[in-house]
Length: 218
Image (cartoon, rainbow, N blue to C red; front, side, top):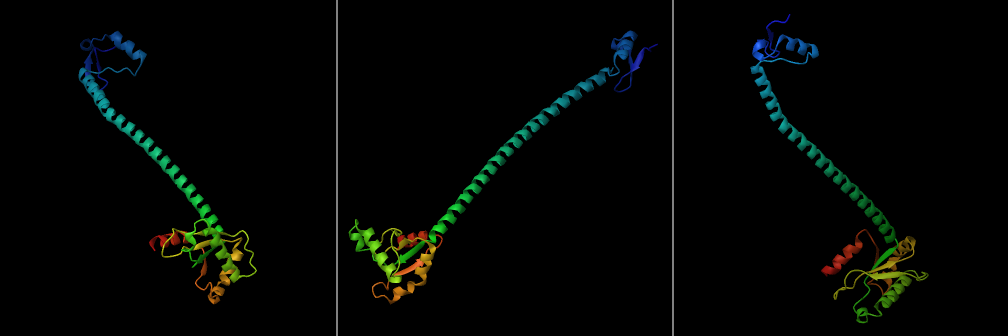
């Protein structure tokens, strides 16, 4: 037999069945269906409702925070990915710079720089100045090494023309052995009355830029 009251499942205070509108059969049927069904008093029911409202109120900003964290994480991952791409590109560019520098250094081993060849009179005739430079360079190289085969050498004036100072000439030889041979025997020019003001040197990293800069400031 069921009593005329039962305890509130929340506060355990007795609930009169008539007060809550339940019969003994209702209680019996409810209990037989599920133990999870709870019977609570009106006060506890109000408290539960308020608790649910409070829980919803708390959950809303928590959801916003979770969404913000998710967005920040996605933004961070995107920026991290962009940074990685940038680093990879810079590393690739750096590698290309190194390859270019190594190639240029290898090419510079075939180069001589010659100073002191007058340019002012040569430049009066723009058409023939390269040929005259070529002839002057070959004469000087022959002075250093009479047996030198001067076919196919290439020359180039470096920097901007100056009215007060002749630009140096870059000479491209066939290999670095020829370059070292001329450097070794370059002192021959000191004993030449015709070419004693001429000097030669090796090219070094960034020499071309230095020479151009000096030409601009003179």
